[in-house]
Amino acid sequence: MAEASTIHVDIVSAEGELFSGEAAEVIAPASQGDLGILPRHAPLLTLLRPGEVRVRTPDGEDHHFFVGGGALEVQPRRVTVLADTALRARDIDEAAALAAKQRAEDALKEKVGHISIAEAQAELARAIAQLKLIQRLRKLRA
Amino acid sequence: MPGTKEIRSKIASVKSTQKITKAMQMVATSKMRRAQERMKLARPYARRMLEVIGHLTEANPDYRHPFLVTRQPKAIGIIVISSDRGLAGGLNANVFKQTLTLIREWQRQDVPVKLCLIGTKALTFFRRLGLPILANVTHLGDKPHVKDLIGTVKVMLDAYRAGELDRLFLINAQFVNTMTQKPTVQQLLPIEALDTEGLQEHWDYIYEPDAAGILDGLLMRYIESQVYRAAVENVASEMAARMIAMGAATDNAGKLIGELQLIYNKARQAAITKELSEIVGGAAAV
Image (cartoon, rainbow over all chains, first blue to last red; front, side, top):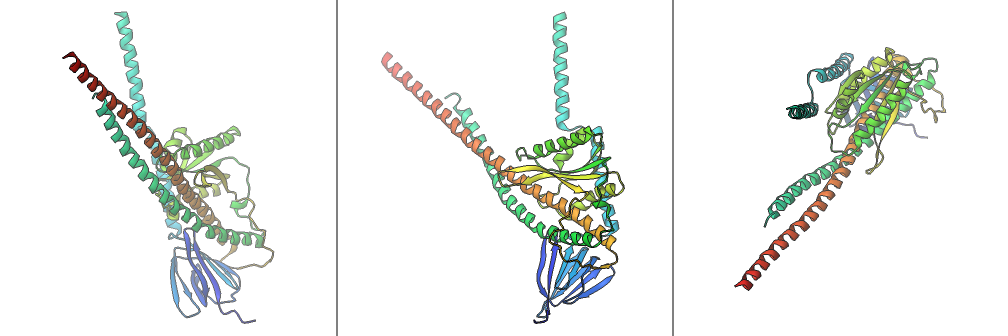
């Protein structure tokens, strides 16, 4: 059996596939430092830092992909990069979460201070109906 | 010719409405195709993610991540996905009805419900209920991005981690086909029954730095990708529903124009007949 000299690489993100094909070497920005992966690497699982994933094809061509973070899974014949489409970092995520909370609070506050046009119209219609009723009662009495 | 002018202007106004509904229908059709495409693109990521997670939990049976442990429900969270705009038939109304059913079910068991709302329509609807809204995001557009959802999902995940929620559900309009979109409820947390079939070989990874940290990162991303998929699917459903609704509106407008045209012709004919008989009558009198 011929020795496997290539490794299959899939780079996928939630919004689509970025790369799929054979490679001679993959270099990825792992959380503990850059990793170079050659065919028949031991199974490995790690998270990625934001950075560049480099895929070298068997004919020596380099492909570069920017990942915002993610995870890297290595099996002897297969490498999978689960890439984040967005730049991920603890403080960025935290800020996004705070913004989402703030929006919810604002939306709830809005209800108290500010009524929608539909609600205002309903209120107006009710007031007009009450006025009409009062006027009719006055006429009856007069 | 009394009345004919009014009928003519009415016909013109219905015709211009028909032009708008026709255009909306065509736009929705092309947008639906693109949204379906994006749904397909999201699939490999979720599948690979599940494979890795399944493998990880299989290899580390002692470590139980909080996302995988079922707790006694004391409070639950619901992520409701809706569209930003209307004119999409009963799409949002059906999702809201399903959500209300779910809310009542839990409230009957004295379990408080907290909401996370995605889309303008959900916000305006559920604001009135007076339930706590933990997070919300609107105006995702026709192409939702994961980055716009991260914060919103994180609020819910943090609440789950902190023990403020013991279940997390996701409700969106499932795209069955162009004609049918039905609201579906999916339990996001705890993750039930990982599909570990087909993992016969037992081997373990080298972890950098440690299995727990990696599993946490993976599970978080998995939930996000599920919410993202639901948001994209909801766009596809919205477009399909709008396409059908606008198609029906266009047909109705066509029917209305036909009827009005008939009335107009009759009125015109009657006027001509009347004039003729007046002329004939006048001639006879002379």
